[in-house]
Image (cartoon, rainbow, N blue to C red):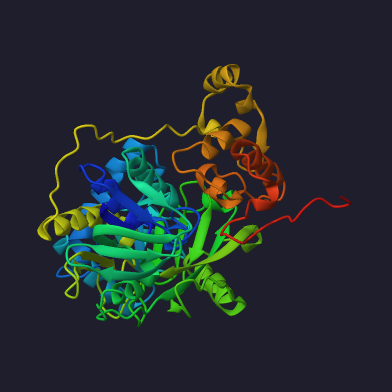
Length: 477
């Protein structure tokens, strides 16, 4: 019998697991993919939002502010890439400036550091901006982050403190019992006292399993470009446009913590929660809108395009509550932007609601708020590199030339508390394959290393999700 089963291990589920790891509980985490952070969490804008956008009366506003404060602490503690960075909402006409002033007032109410900049102040703050812009909202409360590493780090701490992670496991039904719930999966049935519904783009489906039909998924797809590091240094800000008629923040241009540049996303209805297609018409539009903000972008340096799905519902806010249909289910639904920024605070809310539902939360005496350090050879000094290679020559063998990732780092990634079992899962742990050639040179060697370290035949190792196999056997066998 579990005390709590968490359905979904994106950043919201991982944050809930990280919070509950502090207590003397038997916690299980059910994830339908073969790795954590495999849906919305790995395909978003990677921004810690300052908090001027949510309406002050919303659930989002205080959770955004609390979340970014906690996120900074967590990233420092768990070795997650995080970089404070100013954000700008730029205006091209008086209508836009009205929106900027409204966001300014909203930001003040939400406790955010904000200013309204005129044209000259804007160009001084961000010289790469189109000089046709007439002003902007400015804040220095924002940051950029590695979102999948953020989720993975919290999930690793939970696992190291005793949480059981069940990957490649799909929830098919939930049965209500007198004093427990039975979660039916494709791997068997699990008994639990409480469930946390952190299923992202499928939260409404999970809620319906206990008779809670209040939610309707209205998921929105957003497409992006990733540009080479040659473009990353062109801006020193997260650059937003004023919200459009649908309330979305508009096309952004932003650096990443790894030195790339991203442009996107759009906002269009998704066919379902897994609709991650990219389309030529949307990508063409993104190029044009990006150039309107930053005319110097060179799209010849595109190295990848991708899409993510925002887990929205018909309720224009987070849904964080005890289900009225089942007092043993906690819903964490509608986790669209600023869901990434709010995640640690949402984890706290989940624990509070479990306590309100009757679960005893006793602090664990042996809780360890740490995980094994992450080695990034490329960021080390020459002396540090020499010392490390002297101890282990594998750190001197470069496998991914674009990102300067060594065999030692890849082996470290494979041996982490949550074992990556696909080439892309290793990529998310150590960046092998994220450079300009997108794994063209290194992925066969990564493939071999996973097979060697885990004792798995190469034919059984997928590129990413289960079933995305790369090889079926040797030629001329």
